[in-house]
Length: 333
Image 1 (spheres, rainbow, N blue to C red):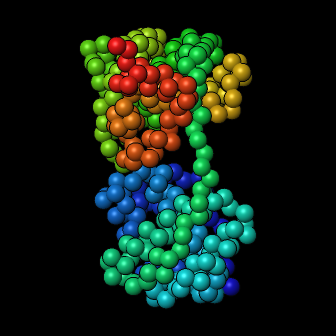
Image 2 (cartoon, rainbow, N blue to C red; image 1 turned 180 degrees about the vertical axis):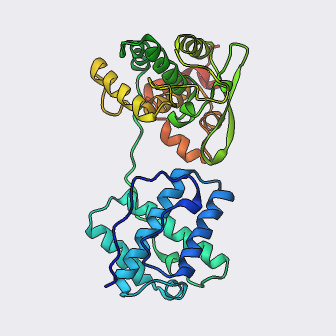
Image 3 (tube, rainbow, N blue to C red; image 1 turned 45 degrees about the vertical axis):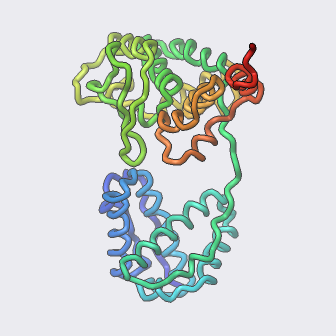
């Protein structure tokens, strides 16, 4: 068996070339291939830092398994000679460790993508993965808040902190999530110069994969952001973060998650009431009130319509009301 030291932790991944691929359980040609694949993902696929870090972890884990499985350091020649049973052994080992199906599906997707990249560049010629099926992930339907619960979150969010400006900050963020359908990362990545004004009807957002989209901005959202900016005690340099923590640094998503947890206790909301649930609610309530699914897809920044459909857990009674109101056969003469 090939023994490898422990994995270094705690470093934040910023660039593909900074991804920690050591300790090495593979040879230099594999090292260069992995670095090339991650660089391709960053430049061509425009994958996020978190995606690159996850892929680096998945490939690292797979290569360590191969080292133990074969008893030698992996090379491109090793990867070229792998057979379907070797990949099945890897999946079986993950199952024995009781890793989740979702985690295994992601890891298999990463390994599959890496091998496709190697094949396209003629570094290897191995298609043994083509016949393996991806483990089915459990179908989880996102839980949207009711309209009344969403209103309660907006209202009560200003009362959770002794400093009034912090409450105004939280309310402005929650309104961006529920009123505009933003991801929490998108809201917190905004800079001062990007703060919407009452003259604006849309807000330009850079989402996953560096994709830009325009979302309508409601007057109530602009008003909430104005109130927060006026009350915030820190300077407003145009290139600095719009939403700040109590020490004047860019706000962490973890803080908003903790504030949402407090709101759950205060309002008696279920555990599914998270910051992301407000984004679910934005889509669900739009669709329930007659919004077009394709338009909602654009507003959310989804590349796939099926992803949008999972976001829209719409009450059947609400849809029937929309149908009765809008369908030609239901119109009164």
